[in-house]
Image (cartoon, rainbow, N blue to C red; front, top):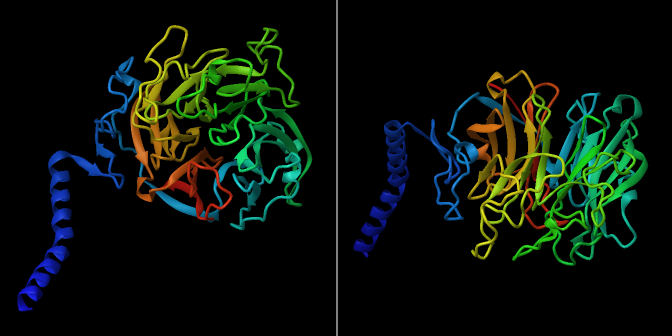
Length: 439
């Protein structure tokens, strides 16, 4: 009995001392190597070295040019994080209103809310559900953007899907007028429905849905391919909107300068094609070029510059492998675009925003990419359309990052996502809206 008690005492002493020893070892390693330590096990913070040193999923994944992947780590500006909301139910997007309020969307159940400048979060806006089709149990909301003339016409655009029989319809665009004081939408009209209306009876993810408004006032929106394993080839077929970026007018008609207008067998709304699950879409204010990010399978998340009529390769060209581990596609093919940057292993990129403020001078020339599986906000420094440095932010939160926006005040606003990759109407209301400001 005494022997057993002695052994137990020794074990308890070891367990008590072990964390201290490990902390000391970590401290010694850091002081000896010049490394910082991230709270994510796969992230290494050593100035001038890549943050990710894991083996690639695709064994022959050789970059086409030096800046195409694993950019060197560069630490920049310290910041503080303020939680503005902590009880959202899978938020997807936000937009800044001229009043200083913020309008937000929640994915499923689909709701819009307004965060007032006094910190009060409104209830769901009335009128949103008018877009639901007969037979839809609910709708899911995705992006929301303001009309460039919102100050006078009060018009917004938003993307959504119908939740039918446990899965999602293809993605649609609606427009409406926002009654900010009355907390409701009026004049709600669906202006675009992607084809096919129901891509699959069981595959509801890869909805796309990110909207930007181009300099001519037309709307561009991303659409995922809804594919499974092995992947479908719908992103390469031009008789559907899956795996594409589409472009329509504010009325939902086709602009005359779309690249495939008048071509037989091709849907005229298509702007670009060959994409898998594009979620981020944003203009670089310095160059006016449109950028997009795209989910790969196992490996091969991409950051692309979007150009009219171009083919981005999926599933013919891919820098990853299929989920079961088999090879798919090739690394390069003439006529298909190379990504500006890729991640292998993946981070599951979400929102995309170029830094346009003045609060963080060190973040000029940066684009932010949210990481869902990666659980980080990835800052990429861009020079001449190439990624020259990378800095993982918010890794201590261990949170899926759904969207990122730069506010008119120069702060960076981030939505976390407490959901999972599978759509569910029962996600806990624990997602947050965060505000990043200088320390």
